[in-house]
Image 1 (cartoon, rainbow, N blue to C red):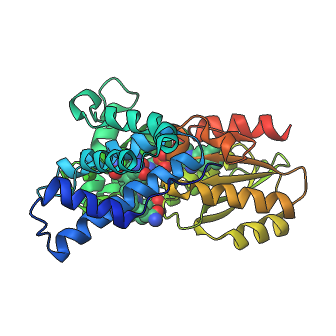
Image 2 (image 1 turned 30 degrees about the vertical axis):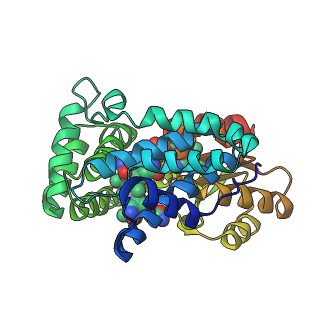
Length: 340
Ligand code: B12
C-alpha cells in the first residue's frame, strides 16, 4: 500500500479559498466549512485509490461528485478547483516525487470533469429483458404503495417470471435507476427509501421460492463490511447461492470485523462473501480479510463484490480476496470455482 500524500486538508482548503472562490479572503465560516467538506471527501477518495493503486476509483469519485454538484443549485466547490489547488501546493513545495506519483490520478480525474463526454445514462433501457415490467415496477415503488407493489409482484409470479430474472432485470436496474435519479436531483430521498423498502419487502415475499430444500453441502457467510449500510446487493447474492442449494448465513449491513470473525468461527462456512458499496470501505475490507485469514480455517475462500469492485477491476486482488464477481449470477459460478 502507498502512503497518503503529504499535504493537509486545512492547507488545501486555505489554498482554494485564496485562489479560487473568495479572492478577497472573505469566506464566511459556512463557506469555509463547505470547502472543507469537499476537500475532505476528495482527499479520502484519493487516499483510498492510492492505497489500492487504483486511479479509476478516484476518477469515479470525481465524476460522481461533479454530477451531484452540477445537479444542485447550491454552489459547492468544483472538483476542478480542488485539483488545481492540489497541483499549486505540490509545485510550490517542489514536491516532484509526489507530483509524479499523483500524475495518473490527476489525469484520470481531469477526464471526469467533462460530464458531456461522460454521460450518465438510464439503467432502464427498452432493449433490456423485462423492460416493460421494470418500468412498471419503477413507477410503483417510487410512488411508495405497498398494496400496488404486492399486486404487481403477484402479476410477475403469475406470469412465471423466474425469481432470478426478477432480481437481475427488474429489482437491480430499478434500484440503480433510483440512485441515478437521486444523484441528478430528479427524485428525493423519500422515493429512494420507498423503493428500497418495497424491494426488500418483495424479496421477503419471494423467500419461499428462494430457499430450496435441496442442500449441496456448501455454506457461506455473507456480510457488508464496517460502516457499510448497503446490503440489498449482498442479499441478492446470498439468495442466488441459496437457490442453488447453499446454506447461507446472513450477517447483512454494518457488520463489524469481530462479528465477521466470530460468524466464520461459529458457522465454519467454506465461503465468506464480503460486500462494499462505498469506496472508502475498501481498506476495511482489506483489514477484515487479513484478520479473518489469521483466525479462520486455512481452507476458507473469500469472495468480494459491490460497486467499487465493479469500477476498479484490480481492487479485489489488492484487498487480498480469492475472487470477485460483478453480480449475483456470476457470484455463484465464482463461488463453486473457489470451493471445488
Ligand atoms: C438503496 C441505497 C441506499 C440505502 C441502502 C439500503 C440498503 N439496505 O441497502 C441507504 C439509504 C442506506 C443509502 C445510503 C447511502 N448511499 Co446509497 N444507494 C442506494 C441505491 C439507490 C440502491 C442500492 C441497491 O439496492 N442497488 C442494487 C443492487 C442489486 O446492486 P449492487 O449493490 O451493485 O449489487 C450487485 C453487485 O454489485 C454485486 N455485489 C454486491 N455485493 C456483492 C458481494 C459479493 C461477495 C459479490 C460476489 C457480488 C456483490 O451483486 C449484486 C447483485 O447482482 C444506490 C444506487 C446504486 N447504483 O446501487 C445508492 C448508492 C450506492 N448510494 C450512494 C451514496 C453516495 C450513499 C450515501 C453516502 C448517501 C449519503 N450522503 O448519505 C449513503 C452511505 C451510507 C453508508 N455508510 O453506507 C451512491 C454511491 C456512490 C459512490 N460512488 O460510491 C449510490 C451509487 C447512489 C448514486 N448514484 O449516487 N443508500
